[in-house]
Image (tube, rainbow, N blue to C red):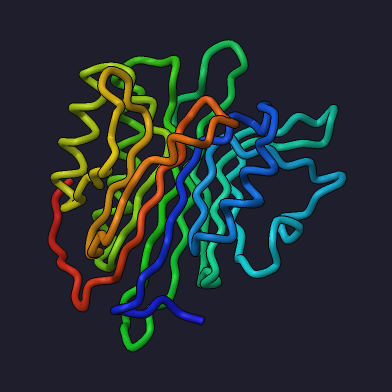
Amino acid sequence: MLFESGQDYGVLSWNVFKSKKKNWFEDFQRLHAIYDVLLLQEAKINFQTQALDAFDLDYSWVFGESFALDRCGSSCGVLTGSRVHTRHAFNRHGPVREPLLNTPKSAAFSFYDIADSLEQFLIINAHFVNFRSLKAFERQLFQIAEILHAHKGPVLFAGDFNTWSIGRREALFACMKRQGMENVEFANETRRFLTLDYIFSRGLKIREAHLLHDIRSSDHTPLALWFRLNEASEGGYSL
C-alpha cells in the first residue's frame, strides 16, 4: 500500500499526557480506527508487556523515544502510526535537554512511498523542549528545518510545539514560512491565549480540519484533519 494522489487521508495528532487520565485507552481505541495517520506525543509504552505491534497490526509504527524508565520497563516519546508502511524512519533528539530530569525531547521522521512518483512523503511528529530558553527552542527548530530544507517532496509536520510565549510562536511561524510550510487552520478553533499544538503542511491539499473538543482524556485537545497529496510539490526553500 502506497500513498496516492487524489485520495483522502485522515490524520490525528494528540499529546496523550502519558496515558494518565481516565478513559484514555477507550478514547484512543475509538478514535484510532477512523484515521490513516496517528501522531501521538507523550506516548508511554511498557516494553515488558506491550510491543508496538500490539497497538494495531493494520498500522506501521515508528517510536521516537525521549527517555526510558528502566525501573518499570517503560519508555516515553513520540509515536507515529500509519496504514501505509514506512520506507524508512529515524528519531532525532533535540539538542538541549530539559532541566532537572535531564531528558531530551524527540522528533520522529517517517518517509513513505507515493504511487507513480519518485518523491517520498515525509511525516514529522515532534515534541518541543519546554522549560528552556527561546534560544534552546530555536536550536531544536533549526535541527528540524535542516531536514525540511533537504526534503523536496510533500510534508506533514505536527506535534506539541510548546509555544507558550509570543517569541516561540513567532520563531516557529517564521521558520515554517521559510520552508514553504502552511499552518493548518481548524474550522472550530477556540484556542486563543495558549496554543501549543499545530499541524503544518507542504504539498498537501487540506480538505477538512477540526479540533476534537469532546475528547477530555488528556490535557491537550486532539487535532484532526483530512488531506490529499497534490499532484506536484514545490521545492527550493531557504534555512
